[in-house]
Length: 343
Ligand code: HEC
Image (cartoon, rainbow, N blue to C red; front, side, top):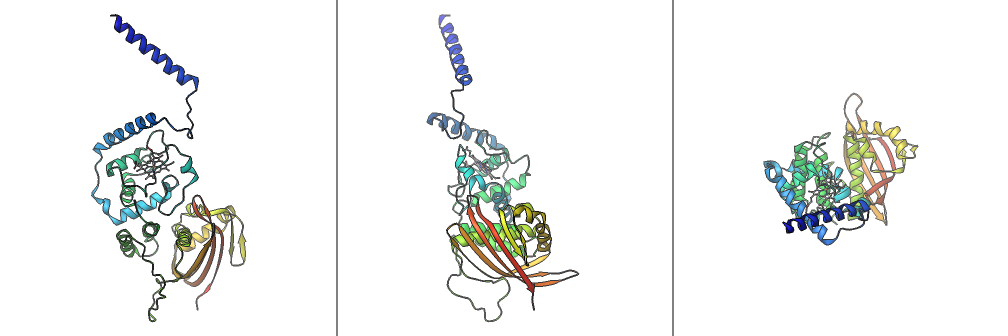
C-alpha cells in the first residue's frame, strides 16, 4: 500500500514539474536553437517508425519507371520543392539555411525511404518540420510522378536535370513529344555530360534548324541559359506568373525601340501579348553565345520564329539577356529583343 502511495506522489511531482517547465517559457522554441542530442534521437526514431508504419498500406503503381512520369515529376519538383531541397547545380537557399530540421538535399544522398514512404511523406507532410502536406492540393498521380523523379535524382548532374526539365515542358506547342522522350531516356542513361566540345560541326549543307551553332557555354553560363530558355517555355505555355518570377523586380526590357522599366510594368503591358504570341509560334534557335563574370551572366541568342494562321510570320529574332546570380538561381536583369522579317 505504502509503495503505491510513493509511486503516485512521484508521478504527481513529475507532472507538476513538467507543467511548470512548459508554462515557465524557459524551453527555447527557436529554430536556431538545436535540440539536445537525445531529444533529436527520440524525434528521429518516432518519425522513422511512424513513417514506415503509416506507409505500410500504400500501393505502389507500376509506372514509376515511365520516362514521361519522371519528366513531369521533375517539373513539379523544380516548381515546388527546390527552395527547400535544392537541385543539381543549385546553391543553397536562404530559406533552407534557416530551417530546423534542415531539409535534406535530395540529390546528394541515396534514397533512404521506400517509394511508398516517399509518397506518404509528400502527400501528408511531416509535423513540426516545415515539410508541407501536398495531398490537399495535388492528386495522387502527380505525387507519384514526383516519387518517380526522386528515385532518379540522387547523383544526377545539372545537365541531366536540365534535359529532364526541358523534356517535361515541351510537347505542348511543338509536336516534339517523341523526340523529348528519347532525350529524357538519354539523359537518364548517360552518366556524364557529353558536350560536343571543340569540333565545330559542318553538316555539309543539310544542317537542319534544330542544330544551333552554339559556342560551348561554361557550366555556369549554361545554367543561366537554362533560365533564359525556361522563361521562354513558361511564356509559351501561358504560365505568365511563373515566367515573371524569373525576372528581377527591377528588370529593364528594351523591345523594338521601346522600354519597360520594372517587372510590374512588363506584367501590366507586354507580358500577356508576348505569351500569346509565343503560344502560337514555332521557335528554332540558330545560335547562342554567352559567358559569366562573377555574379553576372550574358546570354545572346539568335532564333527563327514562325507562326501560322491568318497572318503567318517568319521572323529572325535576336535576344540579349543579362542575368544575376541570386540565392534562388539566376534571375534576368535585362532583356533586349529585336526582330525582322526573314528574307
Ligand atoms: C518549406 C520547406 C519544404 C518544402 C517546400 C518541401 N519540403 Fe520536403 N522536407 C522538408 C523538411 C524540413 C524535411 C525533413 C524533415 C525531417 O528532417 O524529418 C523534408 C523531408 C522530405 C522528404 C523525406 C526525405 C528523406 O529522405 O527522409 C521527402 C521525400 C520530401 N521532403 C519531398 C518533398 C517534395 C517532393 C517537395 C515538393 C513537392 C518538398 N519536399 C517540399 C521541407 C520542405
